[in-house]
Image (cartoon, rainbow, N blue to C red; front, side, top):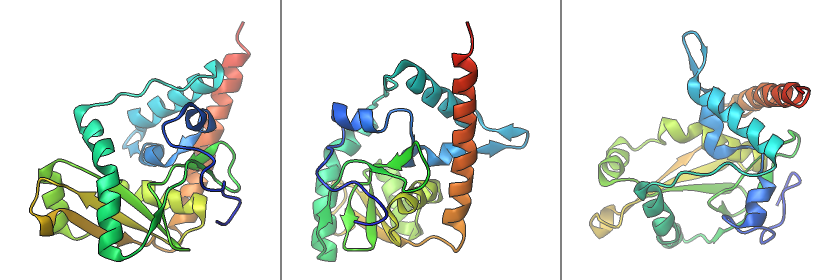
Length: 212
């Protein structure tokens, strides 16, 4: 572990302790919302994420999370995807809870796993049509690049293997793995955006606390 990461085993994802550790913090799964803009300015998803973090900080409780059938499928199949990845790559995956960013306060990430000294994995168990798109596209899906890059920003790791898993496909097509390595300067760029975003969250919290 490097750059001030929490030691493995301190937190288990999904527990009350894990939820408390990430309360009001910018996390990797929402990094795309932080970066989202429109022709006229910040996107609705960015504004909504600011509001969520503000509410969490003011109320001291995590926002209620929505869970669809697709999300439940993903959670159910994540362990099988991780095991399939370990078999394919002959690498063990280390699971940890929450990692704070080493220099940016109120920000962190919960990785799907650490690989060796330099790697991470990001696991998805999408619908079959999407999985087929990944198999044929052979590139890291652009929509998940901010998430993977932010995980590297928090952990100091050099690459992230994107993993797509669909047990409904034939054995030889159930697992797709593609390595993502960020372009030079991209990590620093999203860290700068994160600082701006978190500044907006903090300013709004201060203004609301000043109301009588």
